[in-house]
Length: 332
Image 1 (cartoon, one colour):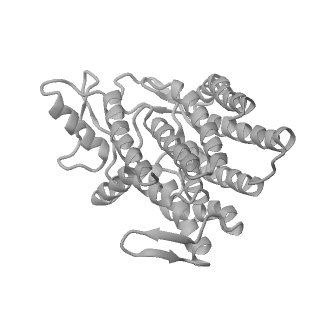
Image 2 (cartoon, helix red, strand yellow):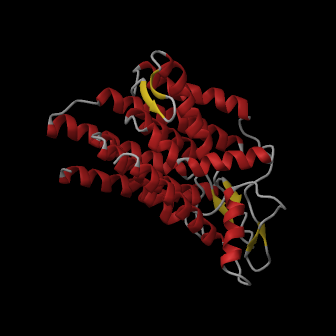
Image 3 (tube, one colour):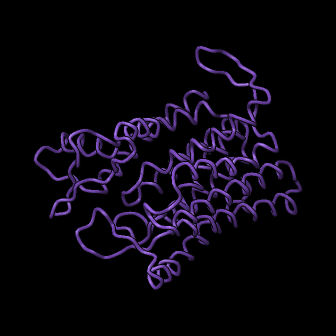
């Protein structure tokens, strides 16, 4: 990687890092805050911080385009890059609308799904990805026109919706984004799509900057602005890099989460029961999220000891890393 691109990645990091303190202050001044569900104190936390990641990521990508155009002299993949940016902005605007309308008051599920189809249109119109796919048991299938018209929007809606459901714990969504996009960066590098690896690097740099403020104890929450855009970016990278199989393996924890949420008829929440000392308990008799499973497993590993929020996040991240490694092994 050219050193100038590494500088651009650092710019992505610092753009997000430097914007966040101002955003946190302004959000609190304008009462854009929410209660931290796993804290005893009543201090409210700034919301919609994901906008800072969008700023850092988009600036980094545009600097990369400038480097490719004027310094390296390579204008290949520019259409794909601007299509990716379009997906990113449309999905983040949908998330921002949801955030501004308020938690549990925002867009209903049907409208959200319909709007997310619009986020997939930039990929559909450039016919991103390959319509020929190798599937387990079914062999090689050419989906033809059904790939851009059906599978691309289905993929974007699926990754965007799924990435939004493992959430509610300080640093969880952000660290999951860091892990999955790092895995996708390696996957695209192994498969000869280094330009997508660079895009992943910009995203990871911005997310690391955000994680510094979002980890336990959180000073800012990401909001749907971040989860929708990161979910859409994950789907876009998988489609453009033709690594759908690896991406599906990466997403197995989310697929499990979908089944657990469906078991609770999509009304049972992932939050834990908060004890007076700040430790956590499984809130229901059954599990309705991998967060609940993580708490139960940790209590088995730590008999007689308390389980705390950041330990739950670490456990879920470790679970995620296992599937990232498995997904990468399919490419070797």
